[in-house]
Image (tube, rainbow over all chains, first blue to last red; front, side, top):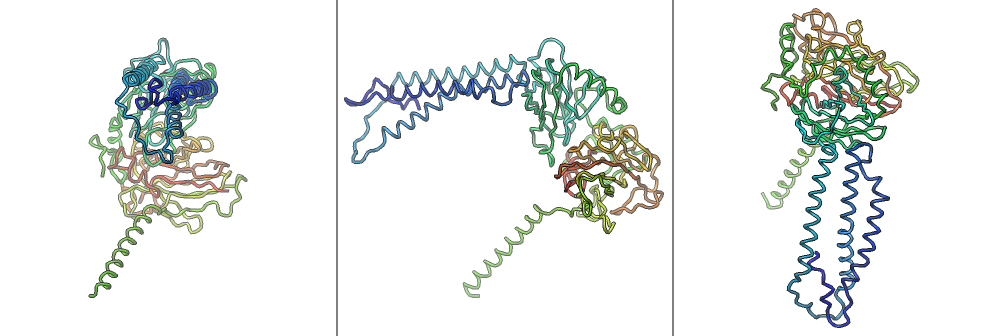
Length: 313
Length: 236
């Protein structure tokens, strides 16, 4: 698009206005105004907010992107409008336009500017993944970027159609309630025990795929107390749309109190659970088949599906 | 046959095929099992008690999927068993549930769902005996669950294997008839919960992967309204 722009130095016939200046000045004024509005007015309200380190980092990224994108978009719109108004076809004008065979300065400027923008975004994006310890995304079982110091481990177990949360540092209890402390690094271990899901804690800026047999680790540090909306972000069956819940970020003391009391309250249930592991293989339940055979009972479809399953009918 | 007659015949035949196809598609898309109305005649938000009766069977001989496990709901007026998983209850009421469990055991994929939650006292009664939880991995104990995530309700359904070995075998014809447990073994689960004051549709499901032969055991009957999942419609 920039290559098509007439250079100010290539003014047309005598008396032709300097189109470059007439485009540049309103573009500059509007770009500065738009960027100020984006950064200072709109920016603090951009998603996903600033509830956690990863969320505020993502908000910063979006602000930077928006500030960079606004001048580009404004240039396109201003140039387009200017061309429509100034260079429109006029009644009785049958003359051809001037034969233009390229402009080295414009082409070089265009290539340089776009290269700087694209490479700058590449570097910026890479740095923004590293600095906030993975930016709240799942890094797999062996994360490259991890915070230093101690973390609170929370295992997210996805299943059709509910997330449950396991706290291995508190006896390994498992609950449907997600409660997290403010000011402490949280280490999510996201997995699934059936189909693929995706753990998306919106206000935390955390989104990690939940795949069976995979331990997907994501980090975040919560800045402010408040409510957390958790949704499944991967179509996972009939009630995928209902696979959501609400968590809470609370003070460290409140969290400790909740975790200790929940550990005690669920002690009997915890005894029923398998030992804490980063992933769970449903076929280990094969031991149950023996119990069912011993009892002489089967459901209509037979015993628990064998290791050769799952299979489609 | 004249040309107009042949054209007319062709148009009629084409229209007939389109009509049949449309009927089949629409019937498939919009078919829903009947809704059992337990809200009729009950004033909502008064704490009135409603008694809902269901059963879960090891098969479903009244449908086109006879090998699919299925719930049935009793019609509150006629007491007939209806092949459906949709029911209405009044808002702000006490719901007394009775579920007859005829099916055998299948272990829970996640044993945490052996915990009873969301009921009054976080309790269920199996043949009159109170339980806070049932371990599905330690024996042939759990057949299904009745779970309404929207109100954090989860109740594991015990199997006949919980307290006896069901030598005669399971009920083979749906809907099963509660009677002599020595002839056709079953368990009776009772529990109560309060329906929400907020009206709306609350889906319910089973958390046991009992859709045998389907992906992770959660296909087929597990994702088909009228079998192992359905809606509780809370009305005012």
